[in-house]
Structure formats: structure tokens, C-alpha cells
Image 1: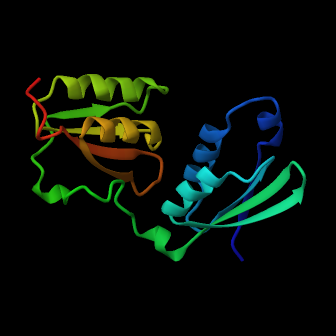
Image 2: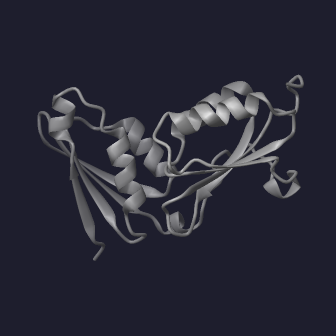
Length: 174
């Protein structure tokens, strides 16, 4: 039987809080065979979609009007890391990183701000490598908007997110 960890964010949601970060930190801390029983006040469709892309199946149960149980269970495919951005060519043909940033000691949003500031100084096609304590979900949209390419995943321990970013090759020089 798969071990299950429980996270109850109902009161946080009722108080107007945003539990996304605590949910993602809990997901990151799960063992590969561990499931998460999430207690919420609504069915979190965007979260379900995102965790599905990360290799989790789910079962949603409406317990009462404002009371939901969502059980996220890792699928066997979760063991194989999926690319963070499906349109990125293999990083085997990318040049060595020009910059290596260890941002693991910084709290959000500073890692994202530092990465974006550094990228602004780089030439098209150059690569930046960074270490982070969590998957930079909000950074992905900004990189996509700016036309940059990236690939990333968690290290074997699951505690450090590694990302390589290639500056938009069609961008004008900085």
C-alpha cells in the first residue's frame, strides 16, 4: 500500500491565503512512493493539471459543499524525468553555461529577479545554469514570453531544482 501524507489547507483558503507554495513544497518533499491527501474547499483544477504533468494521478472526492479531498498518487512514469519545456532542443547541443548561479539561499521572488537580471546582460545563444530550492513555476512563463529556452529538473535528492536557460538566439545583443 502506498504511504499517504495529509495536508489540510482549508482554513488557509477560508482566511484568503494562497496555499500554492506550501502544497508544492509538500509535493517536493514526498518520497517517490508516497501519495498526498490534500484537503481543500474546492476542486483545484489548475493544480491537478500541473501535478498530472509531473507524473501524479489524482482522485477527487467532494465530501461536503466546501470540503474536498484530492489524493495525488505518483504514477510509475513519475520516475522518468520529463523535460520542463517540450519545445526545447536537446541540451547536448547547447554551449557550456556562461554563468552558474547558486540561488538556493534566497527566498522568492529574488531567485527569479536575479535570473532575469542576469539574462538581460547576456548575448543571444549564451546559457545560464542555476540552482534553486523549488521549481520556478512563475519564471517559466516569463522565459517563454521573452523567447528564451530552458530545461530543468530536480536533482536525485529532490531538494534542488537545476535549470539551464539559453538566451533567445533571435534577440538583439544586450
